[in-house]
Structures are given as C-alpha cells and as structure tokens.
Length: 349
Length: 274
Image (cartoon, rainbow over all chains, first blue to last red; front, side, top):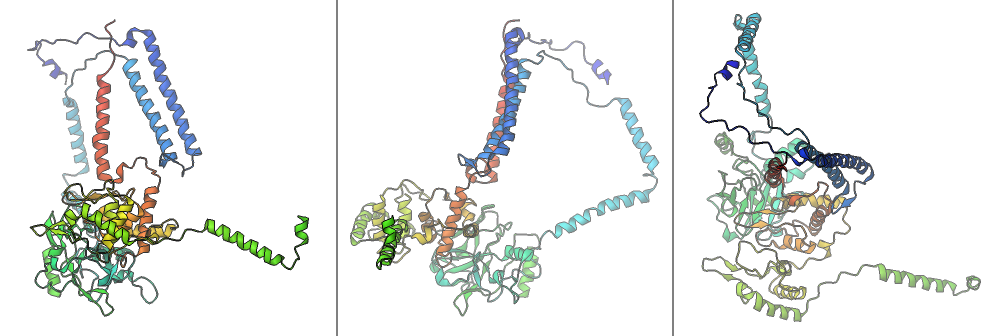
C-alpha cells in the first residue's frame, strides 16, 4: 500500500546523518591488486577441480582395507579431497565477493508486509465463490460426514499404536515359573550356588530360552523369544548374607546370599546390570535410578518409583538354582494401569 | 656325489639316513617348537621378601596381618586381603591402582610403584594367606589363534556382561558417587582376565564356573579385535557415543563455524586512497 509510505512525516525528530564516506578496497583502486585477487581465486577453483579428480582416482585406486594412521586410507583420502575441494570453492567464492564483486552501499526501504486492499478483496471473493459453488454451506450432510470421516482417520493410528508391542501385563507376567532353572545368558548353562563368589554378578535368563522341543526346534523363537526375553531377563548376585536385610516374607527368597532380581528398570524399562559389588547398588544407565539389592531392590535414587521385582530362588535336586515362582510384582516400566494389573496378578496367585 | 650314490646299497646306509633324518627333525623342532609354559615359580625367598614389602608399603591400611583395618563407623580403612589371591595383587599393584596416592572414591590407574619382581613377591606373600585366584596363565590370555567365530562369541559375552559399565567398545563410563568404569583400551590381556576373576573395587566377580576360562579368553580376544580395527569413520572421539559426539558437534563444531562466519563478515582490507 503506497499510502503508508506517504504517511511518513516529512521532518524526522532526529536528523538523518546519512551514510559514512565510502572507503575503497585495495583491489578497487589498484588494478594490479585486482588481477592478483583474480589469479588467487581462479587458482583455488583450479586446485578444487584437481582435488575432485583426485577423489575419483582415489576411489578407483585405493584398496578399501588399506590403512593410514590407523584410519581407513580410502575414507581418509576421499574425505580430504572432497572436503578440501569444497573448502577451496567456498574460500574462493568469499574472496571473490569480498575483493572483486560490486562494493557500494545500498539503501532499501522497508515495505509493508500485507497484501494490497484489492488483492485481499479478490482473494476473499474467490474463496466465497468456491464455497458457494461446492455447496459446502448449503449441504450440511456432506459437510458433517466429511468431518466424521476425517475424525475416523485417527482410529487406525490409535489401533496401530496400541499394537506396537505387547501390553506390559497381558495374561501372564513373565515366562518364569516354579522349578525353572536360572541359566547363564549367552552360554545357557545352569548355575550352582557354589559357582558364585561373594561379589559375583551373573546375567541370567530362564532355561526355557535355551530349550528345544522333541523335533529339536527352540521352544521360543523369533519375536516371541525377544518379547519374553525383554521381560524375563534377570541378574543373579551374591552378597554376604549378613549384609542382606530381607523384607517380611522374603527371608527364604535367596540361597546363601544369592539373590535374583529383574533386569528391567521399573522407570521406563531399560535393562540394568551396572552392579556395584561393594555398595550393593544397581544403577540404571538411562536415568540414573539406583536400587539397593541388599534391601529388597529399594529405590535409593532417581526417577524410578517402584522397587526392582525380586525372583524367589531355590535349589533343585541336582543342586542348580531354580525359580520358586514367577515374579510376584509386575515386571515392566511404570504405566497408568499398573495398580489395577498388580491387583489382578495378586488375585491370581 | 658319485661316491655317495655308489654306497646307497651299503647295509648301514638305512641306519645312517635314519639318524640324519632324526637329527634334522629334532634340530628343527627345538628351534620351531613353542617354549613350554613355565609355571610362575615362587620361592620361599619371594614370600619373605613380599612380606617385608607389605609391612613397609601396605600394612598401614591393610593391617600388619593383611586382615584389614576397620574404621570406627564400621567401614573399611583398607579391606582384608586374606583369600584375595595373587591375581588381585598382580592387578591392583601391576596397574598402579595400589598403593593409592590419596583417599578417593576410586583408586585410579597410574604408573606402578613396584617393579615386576616386587609385584611378584607381594603376590606370592598374599597368596600364602588364603586360597584365591592365581595369576592367569596362557589359557586365559593367549588369543593368538582365535577364530572369527570365537571372537564373535566373546563379543556376545562382552555385550551381555560388560557393556553396561564399560561401553560397547570398552570406552568406559560413569558410575554413581564419582566412581567410574575405566576404559579398556591398552589394558593387557592378563589384567583384563585378573579383573574378571577378582572383581576389583566396584566391579563384580565373573568366576570361572560361570564365565569359563575359554569364554574369558574369547572376551579378551573380542576387546583386542575391536581395538585393533582400523577406524573407518575417521576420528572416533573416544567412542563415547552419540550424546557426547552431538554435544561436541553442536558446541565446538557449529559454534566454531559461527565464529568463523562472523570473522569473515567483520574483516576486509580498506584503503584511504580513492
């Protein structure tokens, strides 16, 4: 709107000091300097071209297993040539702009950002014409059903999100059950109490993870194995029995100072096994929740709200560590319906 | 040569050839054969010398009988060393962690105070106090002939048991209260094996019954294999992970670029001449 410019006062309260006197660059006043700068800049562009050819040569010629100062020779050369070429091109362009391109002060007045009044009227008219012709306002049934279907578009998202993983507590807690052996993770070997020294940590799994059926196929495999593993993973630790203070009803959950806890943090479910053998503290690396394993997995620091679930242990006839039952607390990160599901779990047992 | 070949049917020729062959085989074997693993010989002299060193350098914290000194609050001034075994002494003294320079949440690695001979004598003395793990032999530390399968198996054990504290490439990590898991770069195979066997400081024990000597040597082979890998990505930045690397890129990298851009904009030669 040109009238806005017209409304500016003719006399300003502070006198416009104007622009300072223009100062020239060496290359503006001395032709030899300008030629020198030109040669410099074109030299940089030429070297950049050579480096880019060097990039192609290196890519074809250098063996990918060759090393240079402990780095991959090929990656190093590719990075050095390509990076060098781009750097030289950039420096060249800046030099060009600073030394040779036009160098005079320009004044550009700010213009109002809005469209002109005519444009606004035209746009509104076009929009209203469209609405009238489509009958959007006159046919409410179409309009409402359109909004309905757009709302329904959110349903598949909700359903898909809900099925992204297993619910923390579905029909059962974990695959642990009475008599299942505690086996060493990776190796799958059962564990005897005498295998463990005071201060020992064993990353363990339920034996079913390593069992096969009569055809020799693993009992659990694929997604199911991973899902069960993500809930049933445990750590077995041994402390001096006199250091442990078991809660009421948990006095016989350990074997000679050997205790078993869930590996799943009760905060957001990270696997934890940062065990400090002298303080008996277990630290979660994600948000620093710290659990005291000598004190029933009590939270001693951090955002976790529930103690770490403990798995009651016993020894079977062959002398190997077994679970007495499944976890009595829900193994999962905390979630809104946890109290309800814990109650369901308590009722079942 | 003709003379030699004319006697090839001599009755003694067979015996001579056989003796020669035996000589060659024996000679070659004695050169090529690996030296038999010598058991670390410990004499009564070593134990005596070790006790002297202990009384001078260690007893002030660990007690004159190495049974530890308790503080008034029931904590440990220096823990009991009875039953910790030679491996624990070799690790703690051999890596310079002991003797501690000052009281701190954790004894850091530093240049060893004792020579290899003195460390051996100290270990010999402590080993006599009670049964404990001995200094590991080649079964744990010899990783020369490890196959790719064994190394990847060692990697599985490493990721399950070690990465929680030591990071997936052994770069180390922080623990509560000023403690930390040290980086494994440049730690000798013997010291890694000893740490697994004895559980120094806050580190848990990984006994041979659960993580077998073969598993341990596979883990060591994996650590060494990871460290010997050429760095295809350029500078690793300590391998500390995306958070520290991102922080570095945003603050030092992008910040540096900003400063460079401002510098470029602010500078330019001007002359008074017209």
